[in-house]
Amino acid sequence: MYKIAFTAASLLVLHTAMAQQGVPPKKVTVFKNGTALIVNEGTVPVNGKLATLPDPGAVLLGTYWIGAPKGNTVKRVDVKTDTLKVQGAIGTIPQMLMANTGKKVTLSYTAGERGDRSVTGTILSVSPAANLVQLRKDDNKVTALQTSAIYQVDMDNSPLAFAKDSVARMVVIELENSVKETALKELYMQDGLNWTPSYLLKIADDKTAYLEMKATLTNPGKRMTDVETELVVGSPVLYFGAQRDPMSFDFVQMGVDVASAKFHMSQMSNNIVMMEGRVAAEEATAPDDFSQEGEKQGDFYIYKLGKISLPKQATATFPIFTGTIACKEKYSCTIPDNVGTYQSGADESTEGGGFADVYHAYEIKNTLNKPFTTAPIMLMDQQGNFLAQNQLKYTPVGADNTIQISKAIDITLQNKEEETGRVDNFKKVGKVVYGKVTVTGAVTINNFQQKDVTVNVKKCVNGAVDPLSDGGSVVKRKTQQGDKNPYSEMNWQLALKAGEKKVVRYSYQVLVN
Image (cartoon, rainbow, N blue to C red):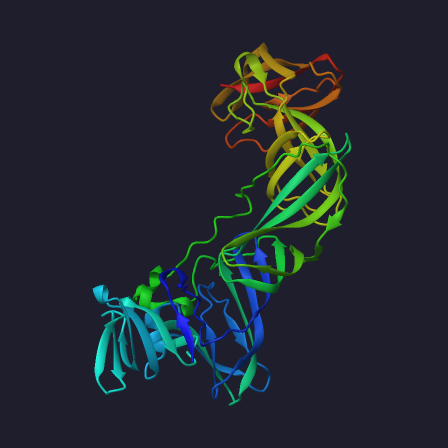
């Protein structure tokens, strides 16, 4: 005989072990839109022709598939709610008494003012709700005790768990032939599992920068243990991405209103992502080039993390790559049309006095062998100082992209225009008579910085533009419907030395009525 003593401080509630066991996960492919393709593969026991798997939970419409070996194919799959026997770990005295019903025990209990006492007998019944246990003593008399008064139980070879009923949903697979066990492959798509990319750009010099990428993997669902994991760059079409497969309908909880059986997708999309950054204090140095194994598959690029483990409701980050890319500073300004009816729609807007903002950015070129996916990006200079945090848009291999960092407050730009000519009754279109107005303008730009810069200036107008000064170019864009004036875009690339001022001039004609 050995003694098992329970006190209030030592009671633990442990996990239950389900009678049904699923096939282990083999591979998980995670997309940025909050969905994942899960592939489970392994051997399960079979009772006659029936094998049982746990309910996978909410799966996307039309994505749940089960396969068996050739020669013993799957004939039918049922998803239903049933009562199972589960093993509950003993964590309380009532549970221990229930697990030993019909066995002989010695119970030590507190009898109020009479002090501590003990009684030996065979357990007849236990009622946790009534706080009562009944014993048949050796003299064949029956006695009842309050379970809350019992502080010690002595018995021989007590079980470590007790069986109880539990209602659970399960997948029942009917096979073609009767076997003792079978290999099964289960695959489905599910929402929740999500990965979020982040970038760090460290400026090295005026021509190069170091780009680092990491992936943050969030697992709100089942525990992952040594699972092959892939991260996908790309946006697959999910026509039924917000609709649950009928096999996921839980009629016990949802009733018969299956029309409402939809679930919410993850709010992590390709263009809406968050990032937490930490600014390094040390001087920027060249990190060792590093890259996770990856490959291009059609319209997707896939990073292979290998086998990873991640608990339920946990988040982990993984380095993806570090590489050197081409990078250069860029200054630009877009001046909207001040005369025509068409507005350019640019971010910058003219301020009082015709001033427009000049923006400072970095233009990068993807010289690596993998695309850059849409993600947050943090920029740091050569000394490790924070420059900006912005969004890097998708950049294919070999393509350029621009990352804006700030307004260039030490570069000013002013645009002034005036009417220098007018011809009335210049042209008749249908019954409408138009006059022609000549507009002359000037763009004055000052570089107050202590370094040479090149500023890209764009001016949009509704009118016919004359040849430009200072090597400017004109591009005719699509004219607004109903407008008799061509929509024109003027562009200059102006090189300014430190402290230099430059003025460029232009003129154009506008039809007015």
